[in-house]
Length: 219
Image (cartoon, rainbow, N blue to C red; front, side, top):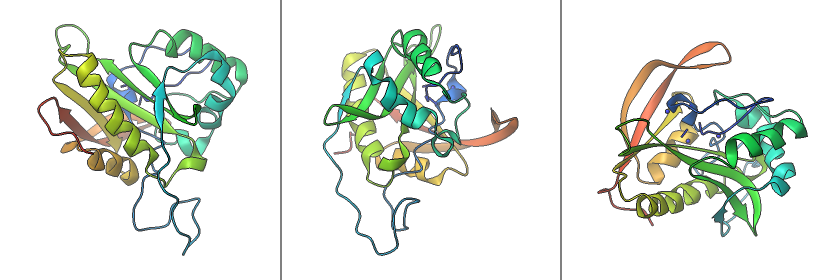
């Protein structure tokens, strides 16, 4: 994928289930910029500049692009949702989960989706909170794209949802790059939640992050 979403991260099998807070674990964000070579970067190779990105609703016509990260085990490694292994599963995910979602956006380069990001409001009387999750196609890791998308999305969501006071996101304790995405976007590390999510039949610890409406936005 980044509780947005049980990872928003955002995924489905034949019929995606309703997201819960645990699904916001930002799986595919092992991709942000640091001083060590990324999985798809050669030693000594200069990092590419961060491209201009836009956020827009994801449509049925984007199914092939969606499959590039939803069917990739490297991207789905830290998510609690199942991958989309077929085009039919991906189409069902778009129709039954993504399109009705309260706030789901494709991360686009030149209007072509390379990842996704979403916010889901907390239930009941806790509408002042929302959960964030995100995912990015493997070929785009290591270029600062997810951090840029999170910054842009956080700025937008507090304007669009004026009642919102807190955005939460969790990252697996072993997903250090996803943690850096949130830290570079201005999120505050709060705590390690022990035995918080189940991923591939294993109970995992996660790090909780938050961003408040009163926190300064990061440029």
